[in-house]
Each structure stands twice: as C-alpha cells, then as structure tokens.
Image 1 (cartoon, rainbow, N blue to C red):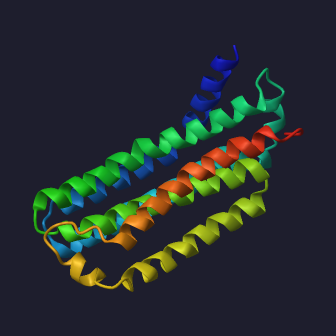
Image 2 (image 1 turned 90 degrees about the vertical axis):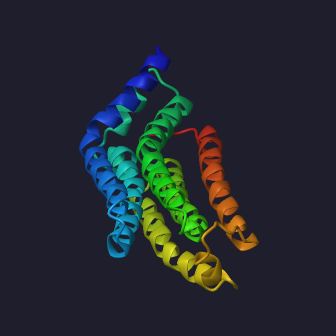
Length: 223
C-alpha cells in the first residue's frame, strides 16, 4: 500500500509538472539541434540555451513540487496518508531526480556527442562537462534545502545563491593556468583543477541527497 502511494505521489508530481517538462524538453532538443547547423554563433547559442534550460529545470521542478506544496497547504493532506516521512522524502527526491535526469541526460549527452564527433573542438569537452554538472549540483542542493527546511524563503535564497555561484565558477575556471590553451586543443585535456571541479560537483549531488534523508530521519514533526 505504502509503495503504491510513493509511486502515486511521484506520478502526481510528474503530471502536475508536465507543462514544465515539455517546454524544457523542447528547448533542449532545439539547443542540441542548433549544433548541427555547423555555425559558430548558432553553436554557442545552442550550448547557452541548453545550459539555461537545465538551470530552469533544476529550479522550476522543485519549486513546483516541493516549495509550492506547502504554500498551497497540500503537505498536511499528503502526510495524513498512510505513508512515512522517509517514504514521502523518497517520493519527492525520486520524482524530481528522475524527471531532471530524463531531460538533463539527453541534453548533456547530445551536446557532448555532437562536439566529440566533430573531432576539432575536443578541448571544450571538460568545460561542457563542468557546465552540465553545475545545474545538477544546484538542483540537488535546492531540493535538499526545500525538503529539509520546508521554508520557501530559505529555498528561494538557496536558489539565488546557486545562480550567483555559477558566475564565480566560470570566473575561477577562466583563471586556471593553461585553461585557454587547453580549450583550443582538438582533444580533451583534463587538468587537475578541472578534475577537482567535476569531483566536487558530483560530491555535492551525492552529499545533498544523503543529508536530506539523514535530516528527515531526525524530524518528529512534518506538518
């Protein structure tokens, strides 16, 4: 019964977010398609559009399914069902994570495959990987804060902080010694700083979700 409720809560979130997912999916598909025009300007615009699409996906989905749920006073009803706090947390994380991955993976892999198959811009691959993982890390942190704190102001502040942090990440990357030379290389060059950034982004995703389950398990009041 409870497993069925977890799935129903997940399907409910996907259904209510269908317009968001369709629009972002369409933008992502067009962004990848723009790379096949083999034009420098459209290629750059396509990659920027893909980045913006994944950033918005990481913001809109959790906002709609987690933050607004308490604002609409739906959380009390959900927790009145025969479902534990751990199962509620699982439903929310899986609904958001699977929806995010369903769009993020095709967009990121589509851009990486297109660039790699061109054979002349391999030096941009490390930067693309870092750029793709940045919204993923921001999304995971946003979901964690939204679920654990149950506070719209704190979740909004976290979202804003992550968006501002992207600019500092790009500034830091641009100042890495040898970055511009590596970027112009026909093959991917994974410098130690770039490896460290990728590892940090992956660690942020794993840690955010792990801490969400940990802090939720310590709660005694969920309404």
